[in-house]
Length: 107
Length: 170
Image 1 (cartoon, rainbow over the protein chains, first blue to last red):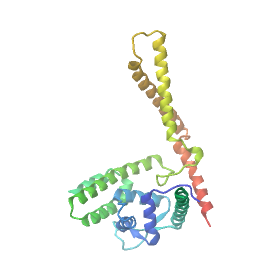
Image 2: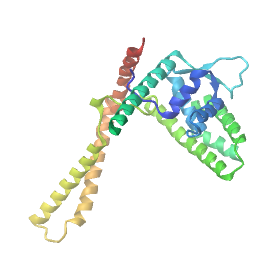
Image 3: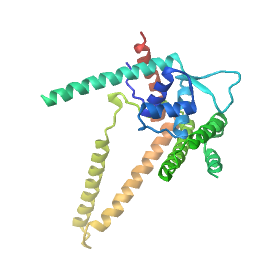
Image 4: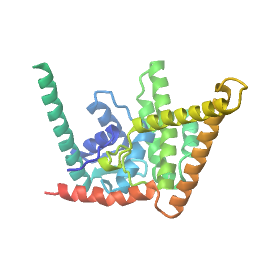
């Protein structure tokens, strides 16, 4: 299991792309909707995360012929999906321990 | 007007970044701006978020290019043997202050009868901090030129991350 944690914006961006390929604005809106308006990404934060994810091969651009340069689509790679799954497992494990601890405290 | 300022701020990014994402970022910014609610407070929050995001993004992009980081996504739980607790830093500062105070007190007892320890304490503390910082900068410079600084060690740690990933493979 991975022993590193993703920042919340990066985690939400990956989660947004896990469902389907999306372009920048669609990711922005999806992250907002997934977090019930709590996480509002700026374009600087979004593209900073996308650049690093591209560099590390966690996401890739969908190459389409007629896509304008300002509306490119991104999708999760198999490496990105695997790492996202590892992060979800890590969080699941953490919440399990947290629930156990809280239950013990209450009794 | 706002779009012009946004365009100027994009110039804070490295050229390669601007070339790759500049148009896309401007387009997403325009889309987000067109859907803003009419309230003034919402607009102020949006512009503040965007411009702060641009500034911190530009700084991050430059740092990424300068340091070529092995840490992909900022938050990174290091292996326990590499941890340096923050409390240690605080303790070190307390110990440093105690040492400086003791030296100052000793010198005042030894012969300087001019008065309180405190006027010399500030000077000594600043002097020692400056000395420590200079020494640290020199050592870091040497280590960096020998490719043995923390940055280079972290680069080597990526292989550890990759091995963690490969263990996660089914």
